[in-house]
Amino acid sequence: MNFLTFFKKKGFTLIELMVVMSIATIMMAVLIFQQNKWSDQLSVNTQAYEMVLMIRQAQIYSLGVREDTGGTGDKFNVGYGIYMNQSNANQYIYFADRDGDQKYDSGEAIETKTFSRGVTIKDVCGSSNCFFVGGGPLWQASISFFRPETKANIKLLNNGGNPVDTPPVTIKLQSSGGREVNIIAEANGQVSVQ
Image 1 (cartoon, helix red, strand yellow):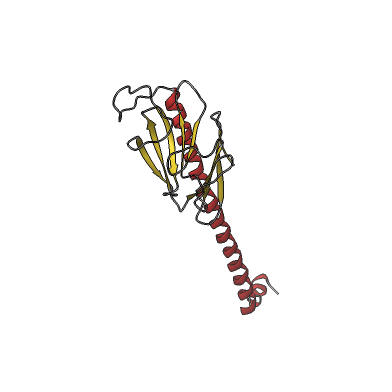
Image 2 (cartoon, rainbow, N blue to C red):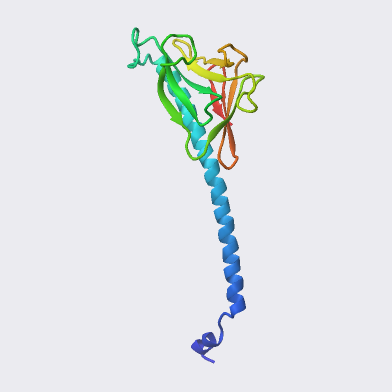
């Protein structure tokens, strides 16, 4: 029997072809499922690191005596920070603390940062209270920096603007698929992602 005749007689039966196609379909389904999980984790991680970079930018601008082009009066003696509140879980505000009260006030916004890819703030917690879940006593949170200190001025306030908790603050971000990442800002100015 020659080589060509051997291969002409051997071939795939319909059952063998169906088995191979079934295995290939299962493998593709597993890969697609894993891709969605990986993409979901990547989106929440990316948004967390962008928020940490905004906190770091506030710290650097405060220490570097960055000029506040949007305010009046002393344009160099300004603190910077980020602000979140319970009424909007898909964004935070980057602000210039023009009046030096170490918290966000109306008119101090520089930029509103909106989370993308379905990421939201699931919760913001101080040392003993959280506020996005179930309402809670906390209503708003500000993390700001004011020169010459590198430490963070963390304000955790109720709806009336009164302090209700103490640092550190933990910001819990959640993806649309349920993946979570925590951003922890300490009073000493250290910020980490877990």
